[in-house]
Image (cartoon, rainbow, N blue to C red):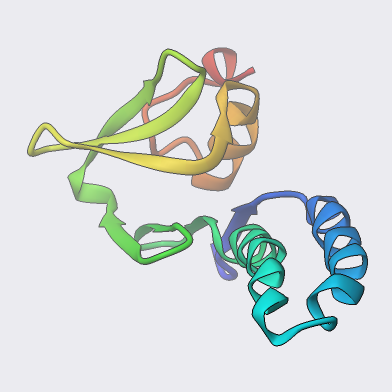
Length: 126
């Protein structure tokens, strides 16, 4: 694996945030006290652009809106599926790290990006 694989939210999710900026801009510029209205679309844009999972030869880098965690392959024991179909990575110390924007439907993409290192078979992922 030469280039790290990035599993992120689809960029089409930026459209509602940009529309919100355009709609809020006239109101926000009417008074300096209303500039805070632009914080919500800015937070949404930041979340879409930042959060995701990067897969490389050394392990996974899980990026959330605030902070990131590098998990080497040797510390990963498997994949955990939550009640709302969200995915988490379980580690050797018994902890779990949630994979932002990843759901059960993304298991084939995750399997392909990790080259099967998560202990999933192709049938389990598909």
